[in-house]
Amino acid sequence: MTQTKNYRIESIDLLRGVVMVIMALDHVRDYFHFGSFYIDPTDLATTTPLLFFTRWITHFCAPVFVFLAGTSAFLYASRRETRGEVARFLLTRGLWLIFLEITVVNFAWTFDATLSLHILQVIWAIGISMVVLSGLIFLPRYALLAIGILFVGAHNLLDAFTAQGLSPQSIAWYLLHQQQLSVLGKGIAIFFAYPVIPWIGLMILGYLFGTFYQKGYDAAERKKWLLRLGLGAIALFIVLRSGNFYGDLVPWQPRETLGYSIISFFNTTKYPPSLAFLLMTIGPALLFLYATENIKNRVSDALVTIGRVPLFYYVIHLYVVHLLAIFGVLYAGRHWADMVLTAKAFMSANLANYGYNLAVVYLVWGSVVLALYPLCKRYNAYKAANRDKWWLSYL
Image 1 (cartoon, rainbow, N blue to C red):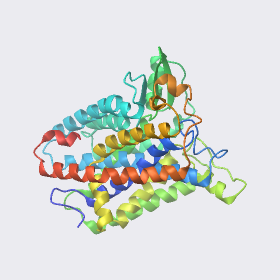
Image 2 (image 1 turned 135 degrees about the horizontal axis):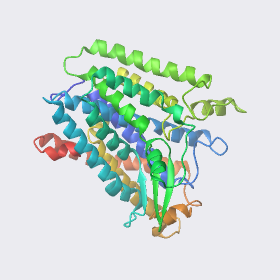
Image 3 (image 1 turned 45 degrees about the horizontal axis):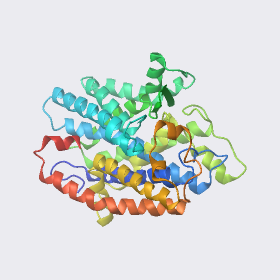
Image 4 (image 1 turned 120 degrees about the horizontal axis):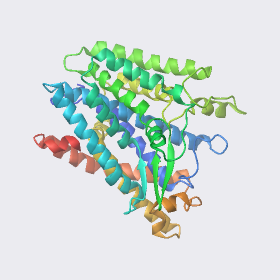
């Protein structure tokens, strides 16, 4: 049974739970691996296969998170009488997520009470995408499909355009298509980590993808489409990437060993997510949905539980990881305030010579996930028992 009485799609919750668990690995690596804030684990000149894989596997998280947020929006819409009601929900939830990103989430990342370093990441991108989607849902589905494909498939044509400085036009471009750390003066900086054009397109496609999961849709037909779309995305990724035809700012190149050649092939651009990056991640995600439609066991049940409370898990895990990181710097003989990431401290690279090996990273990651599961289980039960509380739909 893939669909519960309240129309939860267990395979979707399972996929979301998997990526939420994997996501914690990346954030633990950020705070615990040696020099991780200032060393790019995808830099082929300095990375190792294990370090690259540790980063690469987490590439699936943000695209799946955004894509399924669009799918959830469609499923929410399918249970409402008017598009106006859906639009209001998407608008208000999007604005709420933007607020959370620049306050609660940002503080979790930095522990800086002055909020001198503003980091606009995935919750920000989802919030902006929901605000945009709230206006687009009134369009016919074919128009939504065209916009989604255009934003995802054609945005790499903009790669050659870059901006500098702090003019309104430059700031707008950072928001839309160029990752940038901008120093505003007086010790304040903004890191535009997730330029939103491709994320908006991905959410639109996720919204349309929800059609396959609407009530009454034939399960066998859905699985055929999941297989076709998943294999098609992977095939298109291989074709585009193998010949460096289009779809990524950085071409792959044969390296001195087969292993590093493979790493180069899969080392696609995330900021903003290139077409190759999205094909590489969403394709396997669709095959995962195909393969797990009817799976049911204790492990899947635990992952489904996490997948049903993604925002709760996301916010709580950031605070837990950052708190543990304070103990990490104390254990290393440093001052706890080294883990307060003000704009000045971050840009001074104070933590460039701090950190532990990957064994510690994986140990902390496993501990964090195990510790969070009981909290997620209790919160999920609370949500299930209090469906009449409207505000729970925002958490």
